Length: 118
Image 1 (cartoon, helix red, strand yellow):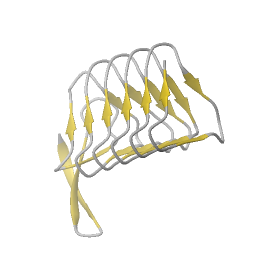
Image 2 (cartoon, helix red, strand yellow):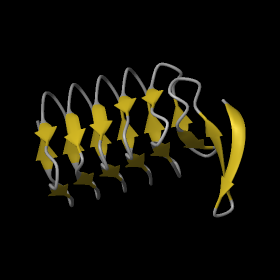
Image 3 (cartoon, one colour):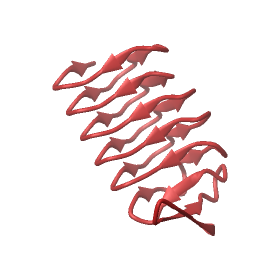
Image 4 (cartoon, one colour):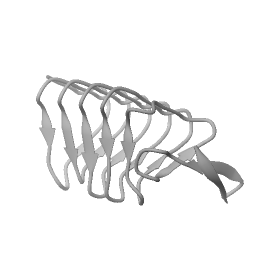
């Protein structure tokens, strides 16, 4: 990572794969694509071949892995876990929600609580 930037007292770096912002407290694998306007914050962990693009933001203690696509103005937060080939398209996922397999969450949807989608 390179190009340090401070936002609200938090240090962010540009991710080498896509140039998006990653907080120094977050963990993002080199194989993950973080697009220019996307952000990974807090203690989020993103691994595998995940693509985070558009104005998407991953925060809290969220864990994203596999071949997941998070795009548009999607917001992933809390203890959400997303894996497999799931697609989060401009929607919100929070709480303890678990999304896996080939699930697709479309624009405008809000998933929260302990919901499980497979």
